[in-house]
Image 1: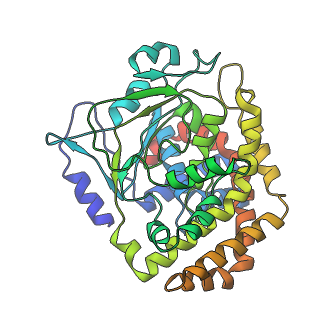
Image 2: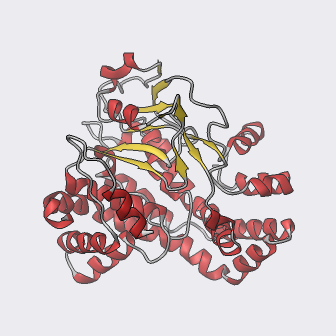
Length: 391
């Protein structure tokens, strides 16, 4: 895979004003070791931060956090993410790049770009705030590989997906949200630009097609939870709950499932990551409830996120009573066992790992709080290190 990446970079045609940087894992580790040493204060803390930034296991949050720090080192003002299991739509033979919309709006004063959007619905008092997020969704296969569960047993599907939703929604709303979850923009092809300027609900965009302004990601990272899908939506929840302006566009990308995910090992690994997400949501929902209640009190006088307040919410969530996570794991294991077939292996795996899974769900939030406590120092150290470190 690394060799393929290098060949792809080498084959790029040079463009004026464009500099391509490709950092393999060793180069990333060298960079991260430098910036963690600069910001941690002592070797043991630096080692812990390095593990959170470059874990040995899969972490959707950690890989994006690395992009945030590398962007700081490069002097970038935004980060744009597209995932490897996606591709662009084409119209008349030309790719439909989301980047155009993201660069047009990110970091701009909302009132200055209001008229250029198709629609706008800015909350009172937010016109002077900068656009923090710009994103679209996807078309094609579901973003989470649970379509087979939906087809096998719609009730069990609703029970599992319902665990991803906050409590308190009326039943009719919950049913609608379950039906809409992980389906993106459906199958509609791009037929012209449409944009909406407003705080963006995390259900309306996807992390596989997103751009963030540096004023957001330089203050708050993503949860580095390993082997857990979905936790990388944290900044989308935070920006929405703080009522920061966002730009939602319809330059959706095409999602597909890799062949690896269809193997027995890939299937089991992915379903366990989904189960871990449903466990993590017990903790994350307590944070989201508090950020929702705080609203734009999460912002300082300049309209920037008060990271210390958010870190406090995350730290408090670690003390969540174990009753809720234990109940969730009971529901998840029972749901997979009812599905039968190859899903029985998932249920058996969850049962075998039960104490570890419950501990990890809590410990992942403690790790997130620790990373948040050091994040502004890390982003500052990355900016100071610059290209001398990244090569």
